[in-house]
Every structure is written in C-alpha cells, then in structure tokens.
Length: 119
Image (cartoon, rainbow, N blue to C red; front, side):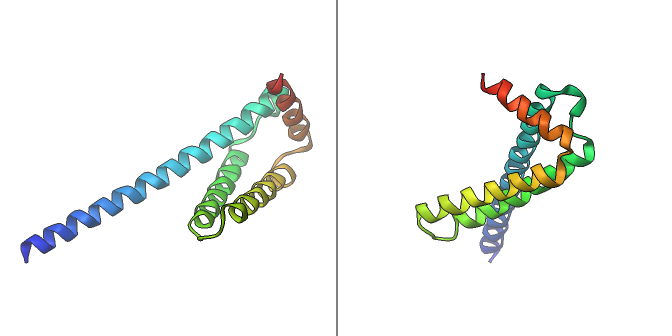
C-alpha cells in the first residue's frame, strides 16, 4: 500500500515537472520572438522601439500561437495538413501584430530593419 502511494506521488511529481518545463520552453520561445521583432524595429529606427505594453501584447499573442501549434501537432492530422495550418496561423498572427500592435512608424522601421538584417 505504501509502495503504491509512493509510486503515485513520484509519477505525479514527474508529470508536474515536465509540464512546467514545457511551459517555460514556450515562454522562452515567445520572449525570443518578441526580442527578434524589437531588434528588427530598432535596426530600422532605434526611436521606434516597442513599448513595454506592446512587448507584453506580442508575448501574449506568441504564447497563444504556440499553444495552438502544440494542439495542432497533437491532433493526429497529416504532416501536410499540419504544415498548411501552421502557415495559416503564422500568417494570421503576423498580420495581427503588424496591423493591431505596430504604429505606422514601427511598421516602416520593421521593414527597414528586416532589409538591413537580410544583407
């Protein structure tokens, strides 16, 4: 009886640890995306950098997108369907960030920064 309780406790702790590790990984990825976007903007025009509220808004959007991608990956759909839906998700979220979060100055700075980073 004690062995069963101990085993159950260990399994529960293992699952909890794995869950937190995955959440932290998603948060790290979302933060890297925010940093990359801000770097593109500041490369084009340092005065157009993202505000803290914009960074938070983009971070939240990225977390939402990564959660949807995670669910999509576990959906059992074909690789082609998953790739197609991921492409649509990426386009949708990129468009939302560009249209809803960026100011006109940031849009222009982002464009210039991306061109600079390509060359």
